Length: 394
Ligand code: SF4
Ligand code: SF4
Image (cartoon, rainbow, N blue to C red; front, side, top):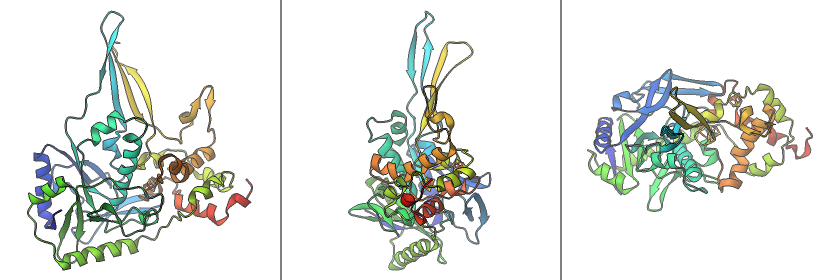
């Protein structure tokens, strides 16, 4: 597979090439004081010269002192908005006028997607959602429709946020590409580390005086794209600059989640008093599940138009933090915030492994930054570990 070095200007050629080939290109851009992923007509819309500042309960942007295009950590909500949209029509029932009706399935997307700027932890999140939606008991038609033909341009991290902990999970901050495939670099994999979705191209933004992009192809399609783009061969200096960038990113991540024995720790502490402490702060607002790139729960709703001739069956995101989520028969099963937070955390970090063989967390830190009261799952786990409640009573 080809590799090389491009100028930031050549990135514009990549966007144009992808659009010429029929892709709807989606990439990072600044909106409402944060980074979002949305349709990208040109690299002029990239968040040039911005960094994100994230902390528990806090997410914002500040200016960098350079022209980095990818000088932030992750967008507010992940790529799941594209593959698993927040609201999606599944089918429509159309009256035939004689007390009968016929069903029209929602059309398949008419354009393949190309994501530009996917972080290593986000590739792992897409890998998890692939496992759920494509390789479970049945393929999810909507997800498969968006996922089919998806082209991924990954970008290694050089500016992690204070909320990142991919190094604990084994999902980042870099990506190695070789004959064996693609895997996270800069952290050690665990038995429960999710495998990343395979990117077509992997970029590393280098800012050591000369602003440039190291590009490595990881698929035939990526190789073909790179062949069509202006680039030069990578030198040992470029490769050394990439290694230094990755090392600095790794060193900048100091948030830690100890994953050793995590499954048994959490499931052995279902009566731990810490669940009461966190429930006293949690607003059950659902933010953490909505921003999480791996959460996949949904519900369906039926509506009709005013003529009564059309009924719509739609799917929308749901959250295990709502009272209605477990409404079964006459009542909800999880009536307390304590039980709902505990369900979320133990599913994400423990029972997810029983279900899908990997953890449900990729260490992106979004749930920490976007929690309005700053609840931090790494802190919650550490508190339970510090007083391992297999000896503590509720
Ligand atoms: S649980 Fe939090 S840190 Fe983990 S993947 Fe979800 S949003 Fe990211
Ligand atoms: S943990 Fe935070 S973000 Fe999640 S539901 Fe509770 S208050 Fe909302």
